[in-house]
Length: 190
Length: 190
Image 1 (cartoon, each protein chain N blue to C red):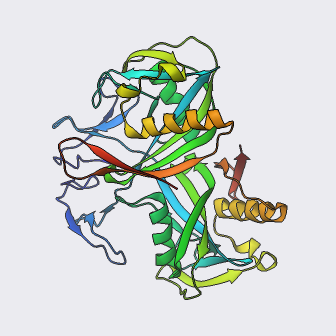
Image 2: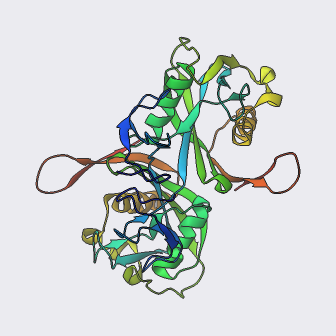
């Protein structure tokens, strides 16, 4: 951020009066420009014993598989956002159920909220952000080609819970470890 | 939003290429300025049979009682944010526990995430945003002076759950009803 979105003046980074951390502040009109983490909402679409995954047609992680998920939009609920993303990315209609995983990704200022869901029919088709969309049983899961650690961890928990006969909410942190040529992540469940 | 925060040019509202909804777009540098809902994080600080509430020293709802809660900040987890807000508003140290209520407030583009928590000691004191901080038992609750519907509903669920011997996650929507002189809200639990 370099300019005030209200008046166009150059902003400064400083601690506003009565605040305790640096913000972008406009010295001309006084607007404080707060920046806050974003929510990524999505779901695990279930069809009998299988789950619907999307193969990404966009960066990052082009060509890898993921659950339908994306940034929550203004004016919608978490559940509406999860259903919208599923429709956009997989052309699939779902009934959104309980929140299943809640992960902090503080290194990128994101919180993932992934819901269990029920696929309503088999009329799915890849949206513009997907190369293909397909149902996978546990033994067919493309474990080596999952796009993101948060999705891999959610799928791992899902199949573990299913084998144990019950699904609860899982909460945790996924943080990118610094250093090294290969990206590594620290996953801590609560 | 009137000006591009990257280059200072006047922005336009239009649907970016490959998108499906209007955004603020800079015709000069091409930046798309996404706007997304914010998370409000807080907790229910428990001390034996009582809960810690704060009386607001700021608008909106000056002088009314609330749970410690506020906007999640960049670089922190939900739980860190809830603990930070409790320290800032109530001078209180807590151990954050399970997520207790998850409410969509789509009319103001907010999602509330309130956690159960354990107050670690009685060394609390009002922060700059609070007039006073106090522990309340169920029979002492200032029900007529609770600042926000989301807090009132969370407290109502809490005491109901406690009387029934178990706490689960509650999820729902709180939407301001239009019309009328008195503000009214529609509360729908899932």
